[in-house]
Image (cartoon, rainbow, N blue to C red; front, side, top):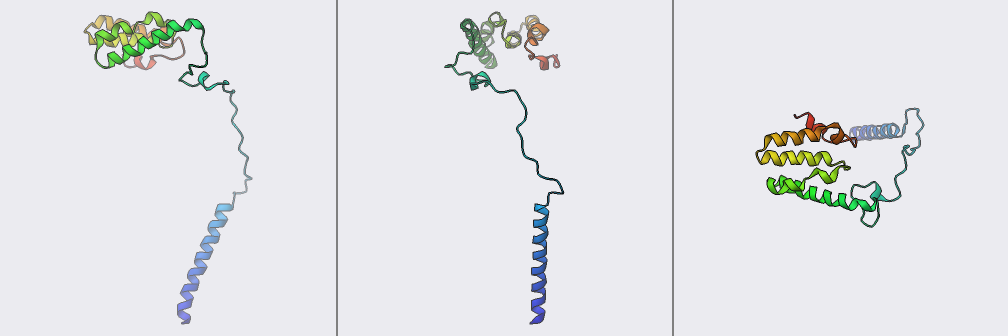
Length: 154
């Protein structure tokens, strides 16, 4: 009977020692005091989410009244891109007119999709001219972004 208690007691002692070791390990900070979390420094966000969110809130005026023409051009661009993506190049081509987007960061994309439509209509010279227009520094990079990734493919 004594022999049966000894392994059982050794098991309990070993389990107790392992538990104590784990507790000490988990609570030991390595001699370093814990530092309080502090917020990162950054400029404050604008007062309304529509001013920094990519989807504007129609209830908040964020642009001048003259932007209605640009909004219509952006809607035409979106419709044209959808038609070109669907393979309807002839219907999409007139909708991706860059003329109404001269001040938009999407100007380079209008030229790019015109190039895609012209290539689909088997007009390779016109397509190359539109792709080149999409890559010009004045258009592709005027707003700090554009089709720089496309230049690597050419």
